[in-house]
Image 1 (cartoon, rainbow, N blue to C red):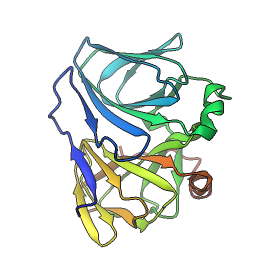
Image 2: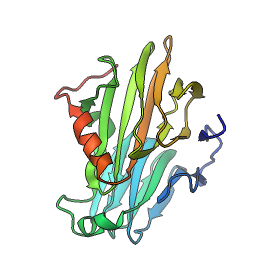
Image 3: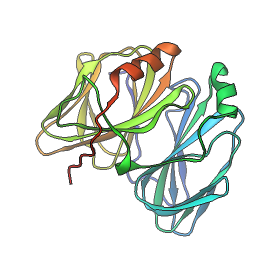
Image 4: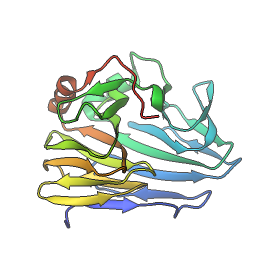
Length: 252
């Protein structure tokens, strides 16, 4: 499909390198993948009217922002907050996904004077799990950045093994990226087409398309979805469809 835009990074990035992925594909959103070598430090500067969302893919490192320092290993999500810089100090080779999001005009006052404490920190495997009607009972879905933490934005993940399927569904009120973890090996279903998606890949779901995901055999489905709201309808859809399970499951 010519209208499906995707980019695979795999092991192409060397320590100290960064790559912008699918620039301009979603208005207001910019996605980078950074590869930090052991001992390397990277500063993520505060941006006017833009949120910075960080997701570690792998590695051991420390995250510092707002006078707090957190030592971490593996997958975490960090949001420094409005007007705050952040530093990541890598202890081992570390890859960090960075999402910059231009806060919608009607959300900037709330972003500047938040009701919650920042920096926001979420350990991946401790995230709240949720159900929605498009996924099977087998699937594990996690809320990584719930709606209303960052105006106009939310992020979560989907994990399963074959055979399993996320039923096809449209959401024209949400523009969306998928980013696949290294172990991911699935087919993304977009209208009448199947698009293979393996690890370390960013894919833009065509806005309004009827899309789903399928995994076969003993292959692993493991990706994050990154949603950008187009008005109030996107927020309302997430409120309706994402229901916390109150349980913590794992495939380990």
